[in-house]
Image (tube, rainbow, N blue to C red; front, top):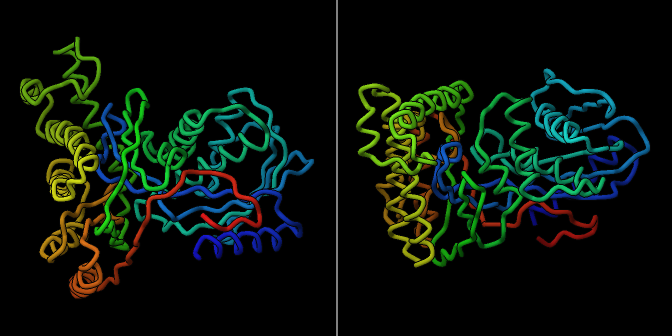
Length: 395
C-alpha cells in the first residue's frame, strides 16, 4: 500500500542521511476542502477533511544543540542551532519548519536536538496543503517528543503563525486545522471565528471525490492571495464603520454590503459578495451531507466555482476549462477549483460508475487545448496528524 511505501522510503532516507535508525514515525496529511474557499480569514465556515496523502517524518532525538532536516524529495539538508533566534532563509521549504520552531521558542518552551528526514505523497502546488502538513507535522513532533503540552488547536495556530511570519502568506486557519483534526470518513465544519467545530459523516457511497490537477501554478499566487485579503479588508472596514454592532463578518447582509458599494468600489464589493455567498453555501453543504443529498452538494460546488472565477477572480483559463468540460459529462454532479487559486486542482463529485470515462474524456480535451497532461488524484477522507510505530503500516 502507498503509506507503507512512503514510510519505508522515509526510513531508508533517514538511515542514508544519518547512519542510524529513526525512533519515531509520524504521518501528517494533506487536505481537501469540500466547500468554503477564502472564507477562513473572514469569520466564515469551511468544510475540510484530511486525506490519505501524507508527509512522513522519521525522527530521532539526539543529545545535541542542533536540529537537522533532510528533505528526501528535494535531496536537501538544513541544520540550525536550537539555542539561537531563527530568521527566514533562502530555502523556501525550511521556512515552514523554522517558523514553527520560532513560534514555539516564543512561547518559552525548551526543545532539544533532533534529526528528521521527511518525504511526501502530497503533490506540491496542487492545493492539497502540503505546507500545512509540513508545519503541523513538525509542531506535533516537537509537542510529543518534548512534552510541550500544546493542545491540537494550539498546534494548528502555531502552523498558521509560521506561514504568516516566516513564509509571508497571510493564510487562514483551515488547512492547519484540517491536518491536525481530521477523522476518517468525516468532514469538519469549522467556525473560523471561534474555532468551534463539528464533524459530519461524509457518506458518499456510490460517488467519488476526484481531483484533476491542472499542473499549472501561476506565479501570482502569493501576491494575488494577499491582494484579495486587502480587497476584503477594505470592504470590512467600511461595513464595520457603517454597522458597528455587527460582531462578525458573516453577520453582514447582502443589503448592508449594497449600502457601502459606492464607497468601497466594485472590486472590494465583488470580493465581499462572494464571501457572504460562500459562507451560506457551506452551511447548506453541511446540511446536504447530513441528509445524504449529493445532488445539492454538487450544485453548491459548481456555484462556488462560478463565484471564485467571476467574483473573487482567483481561477485561471486552465481551471475554468477543466471545470466547464467536466460539467458536460454524464455522472458529474458538481465541479470547482479548490484551494487558493491561480492553478492547482479542481475537485469533482462524480458517480463511481462514470469516473473512468470522465477522466479519459476530460484528460484528452485538456491535453488538446493546453498540451498539458493533467494528473488525477482519487482521495479518501483520512485521519489527522499522528504518530505510528516504526513497524506499523496499516492506516
